[in-house]
Length: 95
Image (cartoon, rainbow, N blue to C red):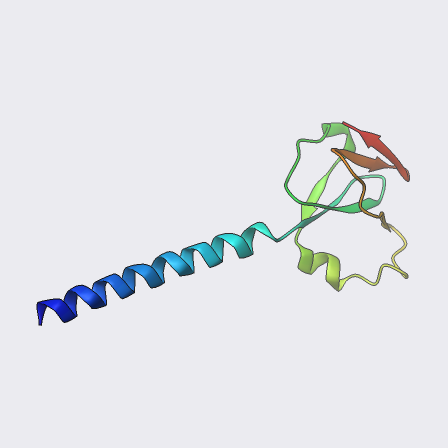
C-alpha cells in the first residue's frame, strides 16, 4: 500500500505543478486598458508609471470590451504603438 500512496503523491504533485504553470501563463497574457484625462485610451501589457498630470486610469479588458467605441464621445480608442509611452490628444509621446 505504501507504493500506491507514494505514486499517488507523485501524481498529485505533478498535477499541481502543471496547473500552476498553466495559471501563470494565462495571467501573463492579460492586458489592461488605460485612459487619460484627454480621452485617449489604449492597451498596455503591464502598468507603467505615467506622469500624474495625465490623470491615467487603468481598466480591465472586460471594461474595454463593453464599450461601443464607434459611439463613444468622451473617449477615443488609439491603436497599439511600439515602445514605452502614452497617447495625448491623439499624439504618441515616447517615455
